[in-house]
Each structure stands twice: as structure tokens, then as C-alpha cells.
Image 1 (cartoon, rainbow, N blue to C red):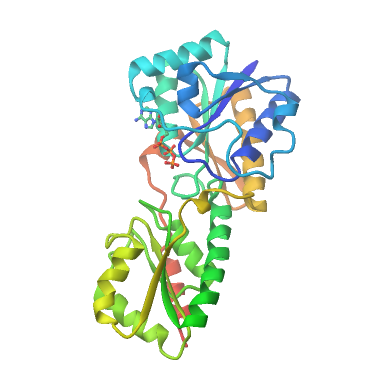
Image 2: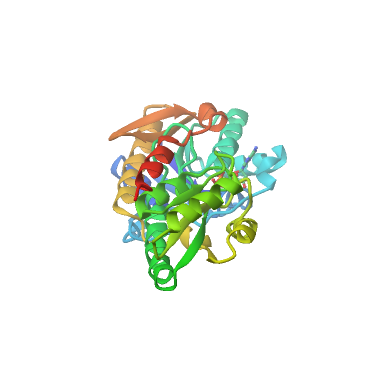
Length: 323
Ligand code: ATP
């Protein structure tokens, strides 16, 4: 393993830079040439990449985003696009590839690897935490911290005005951010794609939580079956005419910001491990964390299986509603 290429792909997440830094430093430590590819698979097709050195990754551990840039690339879904991409790797004498992204990124890498016999390792980089084979994805913890900081602020104004707030967070297919932030911010209810939302029941919950209290917070995952926060507000409003209902969509602030200590740590450990796995001629794996341990998972499983949200947190939320 003389040269390892790396890229970030799909949605960005805080901690990707920490992973890039760790991959590059580990490569340099073992006299391997790190080769950065810009803007995910698009850059691989366009032939945009360069050898990375210490100065490229110095002082980046603290920044959100990704210095390599990221993209969603339709051309990579075609055999012709992937062939062009592989040609670029071949011309640059790349021996192995590390991709940092979500399950779409892993799917693309897996196909590329099978078509061209190039070793690959995937690192889970997404704020959604919905990747099989790991307790945490790079960026989830920072996104949670961003959300709870925002909820704390919204609660201040909600309490001043006796308001009920529906706060929408990211999570088209999974409720990790909504449920975990509900627990960590002391929210009263949570609506997630994994559970069917019952509007009459929600109305009763709101009446019950809000009795004698100055504010009520309901976390809504953007992929809830009853729609976005504004849709849910509109649906409950006729049943709660005397209540002051508001909504807030946190949006892309959840994807940015300085990574938390946890994200920096797991990204650094995963980046280091990814290089070592390639050095041991391992391929077709994703890296994850289980408790304090680094683990691997076949990339085919990481693509096929879904990470299950622990719904015991809903029971905890129920207990925490006790007045
Ligand atoms: P996020 O969780 O943030 O959405 P992701 O990695 O799942 O991240 P996608 O947009 O689904 O994001 O995938 C990233 C890129 O991976 C795509 O733009 C495409 O280039 C490549 N990719 C995804 N699915 C496939 C596929 N079936 N075949 C080839 N390439 C794919």
C-alpha cells in the first residue's frame, strides 16, 4: 500500500475534517502517500485531486465541513462514470481508497471496488446516525449539541410567551436526532418516522403537558408520517384554539459548526484504523464504534441493513413527562 486516496461524499458532517487529518497523518507516519480527491465522486470523474501533505491538514481538526468538499454525483451511478473515475485512480497509481459518507457513498464505493478490484474502506460520516454497524456516525454528536443549544434558546422565548413550539430537525428516514435531542433537551414529545403519529393523541398530550406550565416543546423529525412541523401545527390547531402554537425549522445549522469532542475523537480513531486496515490488505469494510471499541462491518451489510433506533428512549420520555 503505497498510495491511499480519500474523499468525502454525500451530505457533509462535522468531524469529517478530523477524519481527513487523521488519515493523512497516519499515511505520513507509515510512509504512504495520501491523495485527496475533491468533491466526492464528482472530483474523481473530473480528475480533481492532489497529493496531501502536512500543511494541507494542519489546524483543521476544529472545523466543521470538509476541506475536500463534497457532492452528490449522478454520473457515478453509471458504469461509464465509474470507469472514468477509476481511470483517474489508476493514472495516479492509487492502491486503496477511503470514502467518508453515508450509505449512498458506501454503495458507490462497493460497486467501484467490485468492478475494478480496488481495496476500499468506508467511514460513516453523516449527522443522521442511521448507518448500520456503528453506535455513532461522525457528526451526529455535534448535530445533537447544536439542536439542544437551539432548543434551550427557543424554550426561553416560549416560556416568556406561554407558547407551544414544534421544532423540526433533520431526519428524513430516521428519528435519531429528534429522539436523542428530545431526551437531552427535556422536550415533552417527539414525532419520528419510526412511529405512526396519532394527531388526536398528540392533542391530548399537549393539553396535558401544558397544564400549569409556561412552555411545551415538541421535537419533529422532518420525515414524520404526518409531515413537517408546520403541517403538524396546522393539523392540531383546530383542536387547540386557545393555545399559542409556533414552529421553528432548525435546518442546515445542524450540519455545521465546530465538531464536539466525541466527534473529533471517533473521527480521529476511525481515520487511523481505516489506513491500518488497508495496510493489512483488508477491503470491503466500514469502520464503526461499539462502546469504546473500534469495529468493522462488511460494507455490503452496512448498505443492506438499517441501524435501529432504540425505542426504549420513548418510554424514558414518557417517564420524564411525569409532573
Ligand atoms: P447522506 O447520508 O448524507 O445522504 P450519502 O452518502 O448516503 O450521504 P448519497 O447522495 O445517497 O449520500 O450518495 C452519495 C453519492 O454516492 C451519490 O451522489 C452517488 O455519486 C454515489 N452513489 C449513491 N448511490 C449509488 C449507487 N447505487 N451506485 C453508484 N453510486 C452511488
